[in-house]
Length: 224
Image (tube, rainbow, N blue to C red; front, side, top):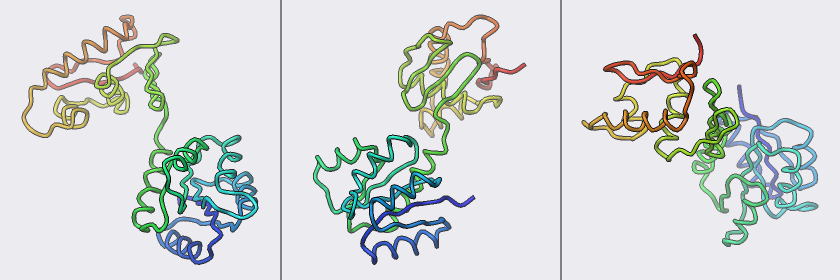
């Protein structure tokens, strides 16, 4: 399904350039040339991503972003702007923008930034394994209501196993995908981390959701 984008830009040439380029890439594009119209469109329609100029008539992109974030916290927003001071960048991000690209910009770079935001938007924010919850955004692991403190590597390993729930993850897979090591390496280190994760989760026998597959690796499963 094609993604729907809203572009709010008052420079006609830039607007037409963006619209044509993004439509050629398969996006459905809606446009507005002032902040008030942009906010009206954003609030009354479902978009997958907003591209906002900073300096707009009637309502600035900063004001639009701030107002939009009062009711929509998730839709990605990218600022297109000639403003480039550190403080202006910080202000834009604090207003709720996800990214910031300075004019003049390279279209291919903008396209990749859009793809990154849309990909991140589609990823689940939480992973679940029985009574274990992994919040990918806040980087928090809980068992029921108890928060569990994991190291960065432990967190990544647990999240990887849950993402592949129901599938046997070989030690080679884990070393390559979690450790990012693509040469011969002692995979026994994985067992050390798994023991630490199990100890910290402190699950009951009937809640042992991660099984060891002897000589192969591990599998996470919370169904019979």
